[in-house]
Image (cartoon, rainbow, N blue to C red):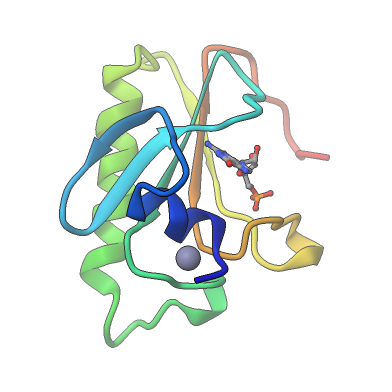
Length: 113
Ligand code: 5GP
Ligand code: ZN
């Protein structure tokens, strides 16, 4: 297995885990870009957003989003926060296992760089 986030799911690489269940895992980003910065990932390997299947993964996609919402609230981001998913190199993706970034507790700007 050659995927960094699959190794985190398997417990082979440590992470500061915020939440996990049978479908998803959330952990703090190793290089936080805001006072709150964590990632929500599916446990199953999906390389990019292009590979997310409307037929197979609709429930999973919703579960990722609502996990991000709940954890953002638990992390004290009631005032506001940013979610982002980067797709492929042009979208700024560096780890090819999909993940939802959740950033909070600082002022966000638009557009992102
Ligand atoms: P991307 O650029 O693909 O959207 O985001 C990948 C994110 O994964 C980056 O924010 C990066 O800091 C984070 N990251 C990379 N390697 C590790 C790691 O080993 N552990 C954790 N917790 N985060 C990582
Ligand atoms: Zn993976």
